[in-house]
Length: 436
Ligand SMILES: NC(=O)c1ccc[n+]([C@@H]2O[C@H](COP(=O)([O-])OP(=O)(O)OC[C@H]3O[C@@H](n4cnc5c(N)ncnc54)[C@H](O)[C@@H]3O)[C@@H](O)[C@H]2O)c1
Image (cartoon, rainbow, N blue to C red):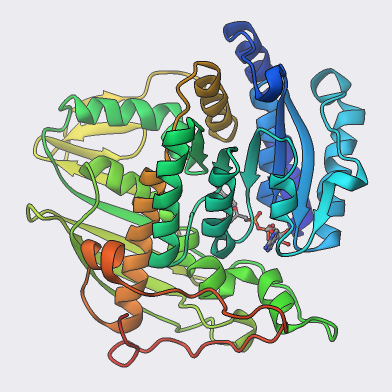
């Protein structure tokens, strides 16, 4: 299936729950006031690929006050495809989206810095869905501009970037602006209820976790003769650490976030292994294709993490949580230890709203209530767990959370993008690549 087909199918899947979710939101919550006393929530989308377009639809589905009013992408074709798709659903599904997509050419911006033009509009909220390497600067600029933020995960790819997000967190608090991250498990009813049960002592004290994102290879795009190094890397952003953080950061952050949630906070250190065993062609940049991590908490608890993108290998995506009295796979069932352990807790909450919509509903409801959610520190910490594990695997060294958070000078962002020339860094070699 092509990327576009997958994307289209994802939009459609997400839309199923939509009508109901938006109506429920409209019934339950009176409209609040946004900028200049308006009763509509103006939204700008920065990064108009699969997820940016999908998140725009999810946001429309989350509350009837939402209007999509501005777009930005590095490339004209991605702006066009996003704008065309949103205009199409607005004309085909008038009852749901009619009159809610307002994207004249003067509010559709192109270029690596085009996000600044979206921030200069009167939008209230921005959806940030570019490759993650750009995210810290965009989050900081959006916070400074006084926008509410929905930011896709991960929020950074290196320690310098994480610190920018921590700086933005303070600004958001001061300006009373909201921030929700695209770690949708935090807004998925079974996860929320399971974590509440665990917090209430269902499995005793949580003593360990094992978390996984093992799957096959992902998409990549052929280089054309007109592409600069920069465009080629940005169009294939998954495979360059400065853009994606490597797959442990880009993808496995979801499961590491759940691990952090279950264990009650971040670990104090980790040791990781990893390598580039199968996906070795230069078309796949310089990232690894597998990682295994041992995280250790200050009180001596451990958790294991495994992530792999290798075709033909066993797949597993999920989180296993173990406590002194019981254990289970998130988010549906917890049982007592032993081969026939009795069920301790089971999700019985029935159908629930698509978490990709629920996360926007929760953000908008918190804005209406006058107490905007601010998840920026939480996702910055979870992002750092993935980054510190990558740093450990690349260098072969143990990495502490304190070093990564407070001392590391690692800044992977290119110093000069203007020329379009960008050398691919060498593949990291544990024992030789330096920890900085
Ligand atoms: N929460 C989830 O389940 C989930 C699912 C998929 C993707 N994501 C995340 O969403 C983000 C985007 O992923 P995607 O699958 O949409 O990728 P994508 O390649 O489809 O879209 C990224 C878009 O950003 C654009 N872009 C690149 N640099 C830019 C810049 N400087 N300014 C503006 N636009 C720029 C690209 O041209 C592209 O259109 C990633 O962080 C990814 O991890 C989250």
